[in-house]
Amino acid sequence: MSIFHSLYKGLQDACYIWRKEMMQVVKDEGVLIFFIFVPLVYPLLYSWIYNNEVVREVPVCVVDQSHSHLSREFIRMCDASPDVHVKYYAQDLDEAKSLVSRQLVKGVYFIPRSFAEDVYGLKRGVVSVYCDMSLMLTYKAIFQTAQMVTMEMGNELKTMLGGHYTAREEAIATRPLDYEDVPIFSPSGGYGSSILPAVLMLILQQTLVLGIGLSAGTARDENPYRSLIPVGDSRYEHTFPIVLGKSMCYLMVFMVMGAWLSVAVPRLFHFPQLATAGSLLCLMVPYILACTFFGMMVSCTVKYRENVMLIVVFVSVPLLFLTGVSWPQSSIPSYWQGVSWLFPSTFGARAYIRLNSMGADISDVMPELRILWIQAVCYFVLTLCVYRFQFFMARRFAMERLKFLKHKRESKMKE
Image (cartoon, rainbow, N blue to C red):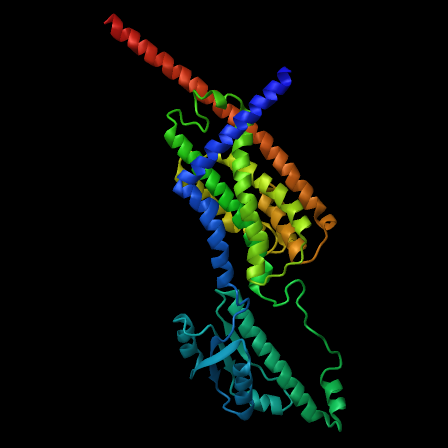
């Protein structure tokens, strides 16, 4: 009977702590912003910025020293492409470099004086392409446009010099092996469909850690013993109900935010959405649990509210690279891959992309799900240990404080 009574008492304490933590979340404006406002608004803003998927009409400058019909044809075809817009003409490369340095254009097409003579003289004509490498998307548009135009002009020249009689013969001669460019797992071939799903999972982890860290900083500010656990409240005597009650609060809030980020946002912006509701639920439960206990463990190291913001903002970009989405996983050094195993976002983002963008089945992401469950259990145990240590140190500090005050009062009475 005592076992059931202890379980009932522990459940009552956990519900009490859950209610207190929920009230703290509602009262604290900073925590409310990172728990509600940021997960709701930030993904919309980020997805809206990259909703065009690819860059169009990138401004370029042309240095045409040939002034021939062939060079003008090359310029017209580049300008007619959807990716490039010929905005300026320059006399030489120095003038073109000045336009690039002033960010008026993103690249330069340089056509040498001997361009037409080389081509018509059965030599290789050369067009030099200079790109601003500060943004890879503009570089890709400028370079690929020049590449496709030169290939198309080369095919036309082959047709003229081939001496064929029918259109079929000309097509076979210019392109004996035809190909079709089909982007895999990204129908638009754009940035949003390939990168933003991983960003959404990272936002979920970072906002959860930020909110828990801010809540922990507030608790330390209000508690004179600098602890996350109130001293003197009988309902905070055991560690397990404390961790359970707090995690119930965070889990309730972020299961809703997780559904918003993983289901609603991709649907609003027409990202690939191939996962079923059951597979997403199987992923989000261990992922949010792992992020919750990870955030609770990290919050024990937060002394002030501002510290957690600095830490989370600093590691956000490295964590995105460590997921293996924006940078190939095979190119990441082994020691950095070991570091990535500490963060739930690594496996949460990989599993989400395979399910939602690649159409994988739940059995295909089972290794990631197992690791997420292992992380959830390990961080839960570590959180229990850290909270227990916090409780021990808080009580010890309180006892020392009481002894000091008692000794001070006795000294005054003797005087």
